[in-house]
Length: 362
Ligand SMILES: [Ca+2]
Ligand SMILES: [Ca+2]
Image 1 (cartoon, rainbow, N blue to C red):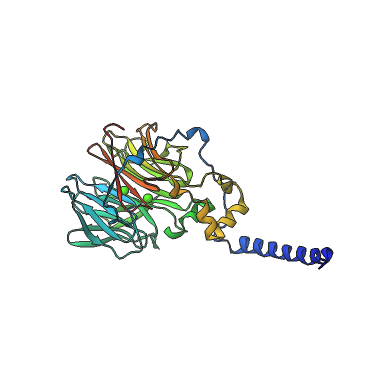
Image 2: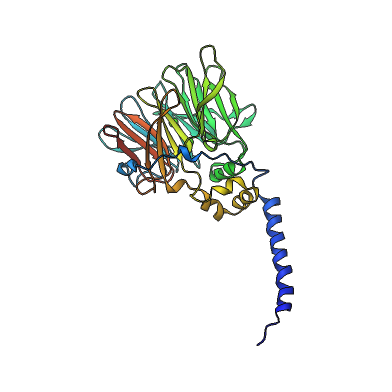
């Protein structure tokens, strides 16, 4: 049968144009992100050769832990982790795991120990709470009359004040990647004063506020901005008190949680935010809208499951060490690194264990 090409052409071209128009309308009018900014990606010079040292981790609690995002080891050597299914589980020094407390929440993220023995926990739905043997107490759930959503990490100062990050006031944990695609700063650093039972905004306009840590002398704190590939130093004492400066920038990944190391430097977990070869998405508004509109595209671009990286950064902002698993073979999506007695304990948003790495030879 002969095909009438000119008739087919007449039909196909308008149909294609209509489909293109429909997709464009869908993308621009129903896109979940608004007026996205371009993202400044780290320069290639910040990328160091892979060493795959994280492939040597020992797996603690494998199968018992579901997405342990953050880890903390208290002074007695008990390891705590907050898992993606709302459990605080702990590992005793004798090697036994305990399901310690269950929090009624879709997810919990950053944790820190409190000087009076309990654990402070970031709940993405309800704010910040305290967990101890007696039970769970809600500390703060509002700031300036607004519900606190997506609290990400917390640290307690010796006066009892809590400093904690809100990753995004616009997007939720389940669609956190949209915050990065929109690249408009919706992150905050908040402070909870337990004496006044008051919460205030310390810093606003952060690019996905994530890990929070205090310096050894508590003269400043560091808060990480994931999609700005940097961490800020916020002065708490001295002449510069109340001022903010850049602590470290151009990191070879998006910084997640941060913890003080024994020597006064910091361990920072870095996320591989974009799958290799798809970096152009961050410099095209159309690509951003497309990626934000179709979940399968968002998943394709998100590179966090493909690698794991941890850096040690000196108090002056110099990168001292880097450990990675360049293909995510043993561990990927490492979100926290905590040093205790010459070992590093690693949390991850994709693993079912806590990684343990000896620092003796590393
Ligand atoms: Ca933490
Ligand atoms: Ca985090």
